Length: 53
Image (cartoon, rainbow, N blue to C red; front, side):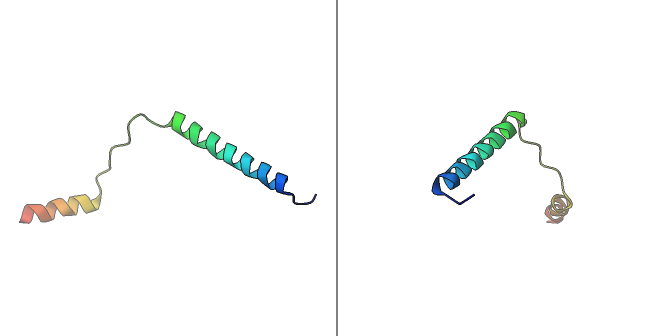
């Protein structure tokens, strides 16, 4: 099958539709609140440095 402009446009529209569908689905399944940041070793070390001053 030859590569035609209308075929390329249709592929582009299909890809855009798939992306919009994926983003909408992700938005619907997302939590209402963002997750709390986890305490990391860097935060613990930073607290230790602040305590020493």
